[in-house]
Amino acid sequence: MRTQGKHVIIVAGAGPAGMAVASSLSKAGHEVIILNRDIKFGGLAEYGIFPSKLKLRGGLKKQYSELIERPNVHYFGNVSIGIGKDLTVEEVRTLGASAVVFSIGAQGTKAIGVEGDSANGVFHAKDVVYHFNRLPGFGDRPFDMGKHVAVIGAGDVMVDIAHWLVRYKKVERVTAIVRRGPAERKYNPKEIRAVCANMDVDGITKEVARIKDRLAAVGQNADDVLKGLTGEFTKCEPKVSDASMGFKFLASPKRILVDGNNRVRGLEMEDNKLDPKGEDTVAVGLKQYYEFPCDSVVFAVGDKVDETVGLPYKSGIFITSPNKTGNDPDDALFQAYDETTHTIIDGVFLAGWARKASEGLVGIAKRDGDWCAEVVSRYLSTKSPGSHSDAKVVLDKLAAVLTAHKSHPVGLEGLRILESREKTHWGEDCIGEFKYASNQEMLGLIEPGKS
Image (cartoon, rainbow, N blue to C red; front, side, top):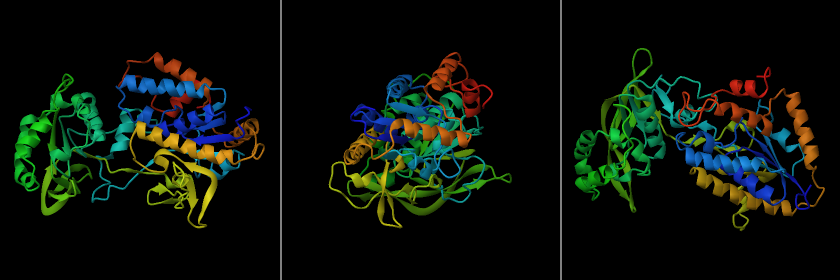
C-alpha cells in the first residue's frame, strides 16, 4: 500500500456523493472499495438525469469511469447492503476497514397520505423517473398512464415527467397541479423548452384569469404573472406529438377518486389562496372542493431512506450526531449516531441523500461527498498504521463473504463487457443511449449461465 494509504475505505454507493468521497480519498492515497447496489455506477447521474441529456450524462460517466480505473479503487457492483441483502451493515464493518461511508441514497418513498393512494394509476415521481431511465426493477415494469395525467408539483422533476409523457409516451394531456400560483413555479425555464411547444396557452390564460383576484390579494398582477409564465415558452423543441399541457394553480389534491375497478378516475381538489410569509407566500386551503378528471396521478412527495439497511433511523433519515465539533465542515453532520446509547458509531459516516434525503441533485450531492471526504480524512489521520487490516485482507474477506452468500458482484471487467454489448444496440427502443432494463439480462451477458 501507499505510504499515505494507512487504511482501507469502504464506500457503499456509487452515485455523485459516493463517487466524490471515493475520488477525494483515493487521490489522497487511500485504498477505496466501492460497493454499489446497481450493476452500473452513477446513481442519480445514471438513473435520475433525463436520458436524452447525453452531454451531461457522458461527462459524468467519463469522470466515474476514470475513477474506478485507478489502481487503488476496487469496484463491486450488484452488491446490496441491508437486512437480508448481500451484506449486512455488521458484515461490512467486520471486514476490517478503517472507515465506512454510506452514500446509498434515499431508496424509499414517502407515503402520499391521501385517501385512494393505493389505486391503480397512482405513481411516485421517482418511480416514473427510474422507469424511463430503465433502472432494473422499474425499466421493465409497465406504467399504464392513460390519456390524461395529473403531475403534482412545479419543479424540474415535474418537467422531466411531462417531457417523457408528452414527447415519448405521447399521452393526450398533462396537467401540472400546483398548490401555489404561477409566480411560485420552481422549474428551470430552460427545462420547460422540452414541452413548451405543446403548451395549451389559451387554457393557461383562462386558468390565470380564474385566480386573478387571489393573486391580487398578495400584490401579484395576473397580466404580469401570465406574461412572465408564457414568456418562458421560447426556443421550444419541435412538437413530436399532439399532446397538450396545462396547469391547475392554487389547487391541492385531497382525495383520489376511483372507479369500480379501483382505477383512478380523477382527483378531489381543494381551492387555495395565497398568504404572505416573509418575502414568500404559503398556500392556505379555502375548504372549497371540486372534482378534476384524470386517468393517472404522479406525486412528487419526497423521498426517505431505506430503514431496512440496518443503520439507526428516524423520520425518513438515518441519524447523525447531534454533538457539534466546531470543525468546518462539522464532523457531526456526517457521523452515524446511535440514539439508544447516545454515542457516535465509530468509523461510520453518511453522505449525500443517505443523510439528507431529496437535498438537491448531482452538484449538491457531489459537494456533500467532498465535505464528507474532509471529515473522513480527519478521522483517518487519527489512526495509526496497522490499526486496521490492509487492503488485500479486506478484499479477501469481502470475496469470501460474497461467495458464501452466493452473490454475483460485477467488477471493472464486467462493466466493460456490458458497455460493449450495449453500444451495439444504441438507437433501439430507448431514450438516449440503450440500456438493458434488468439485472438478469446484464448478468447473463457478463457471466453467461450465472444470471
